[in-house]
Amino acid sequence: MKLNLIKNQQKFLSKILVFKPLKFAYFVVDQFLFLITLSLFLYSIIKGNREPSWDNITVLALTSYLLLKFIIVNWFGLNTYFKYIRVFNYNLKVDKNKVKIYRNVDYAPLWYISLRIFSIIAVAIICMYETQNLVNSKNILNATITICLNLLLIPSFINTFNTIISDKKGIENNYTKLVKDQYYSNESLFENIEWSERQLNLNCKNVDLVSKNGVFVTLSFDDLNSKEAKDVQEINQKILERYKEIWKVYYELLRERFKNKFSRTASKKLYWIERIYDHIFLDFYAI
Image (cartoon, one colour):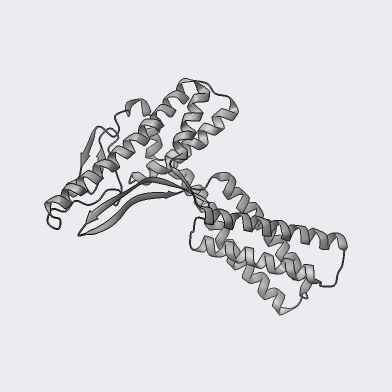
């Protein structure tokens, strides 16, 4: 039963987690460049050549690229992980146009964030070391490079750590206290509901939590003809059924997890599986 639980959960989530080949290619290239940088740096250290050479310049160029990419990604808050959560994806025909109605949630596991932090710290150290070697320590250019690196990297690291902290705080709010910890009272979470005006939001009465704006399609009888209004209602019902389906699977996970004892390895797997569901419902509720 325990093994089946993990297998069934992984099978279900495999349909939700969408793989992005292009982002994965970028990830592989970055890791390859990092390994080349590290290898060349170690080679130059072992060689012990104090004079600037091609390997030093190559290392400095590679570290500059990796640092610049890290800074840009963090400043603009871009998610570089090669998978994302696709909650739903439907088509709606309105005003003779086909409109995509979808909900995607960014997701990045802890191992990926940790790897990025470790690699960029190593790259920053190598970059500073090579800069000191190539530029005189009392040179104004050296001082400029050092200050620029500090000014650019510190905010980037702060943004990364804030992402981790805010994500953790999101789990430890009313969502956990009302939904997860009291799962036994929430089997009918998406059954006992009430639509707001124009179906802008959905109120889950069990926990008195409301969905965010934009999850459902706004139903405006003033602007839509009868067929379009009916189609919007059907789409919203489909979206609701989708969240019902996801919650049903998650509910089974919570029930079995609290009911049974699992090994440390299995518990870790279930913990990270839970985090994917947490991302979905934290994105759903206006908390």
